[in-house]
View 1 (tube, rainbow, N blue to C red):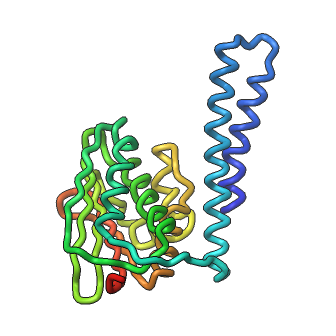
View 2 (cartoon, helix red, strand yellow; view 1 turned 90 degrees about the horizontal axis):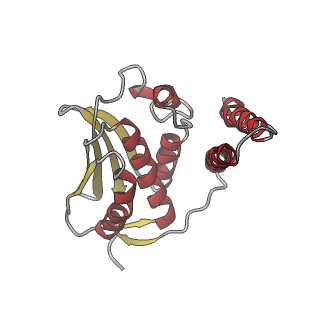
Length: 218
């Protein structure tokens, strides 16, 4: 499965470079071919990085840089940065403020979780759809809900959505995705002693629910 994920962008790269080497190619067409090649290189780099991270997590060699994080501040910064990514499809993104809670986590990996969920949501949210972030505090856990409107996840894929490469089956029709992003989300959440689940929301959409231990503020 991993070799298949690597062969596809390499095949596209070879085709684009062969086209760029044509002697009769105009400068405008050459620039377009190089731009498309660059995009594929970025995609290939992402695949390799995700494979490397997943292998480190499975091998138990992945180390977290833990610190105290104000959960709302984390979400507020993510919400601000994500606006540019949802702009093209005119997706509205709403952040609902919850109680003041602190978690003990790796800031970089928390951002990795959020942007992987966002990437997944943008793929499957229709134009002018909506994404909603909210959280509550329940006993010793913060319960974070990442909702996006759309048709939801098929019943065949939902039980195994966090398996490596499994989610790529649902992404094939949209032309993107390695099937590794959600697998990494699960590994990172569980490495923080938390849990994650995906469910189809009754209001027609998908919700990812993440539970993380609340840590007393320093």
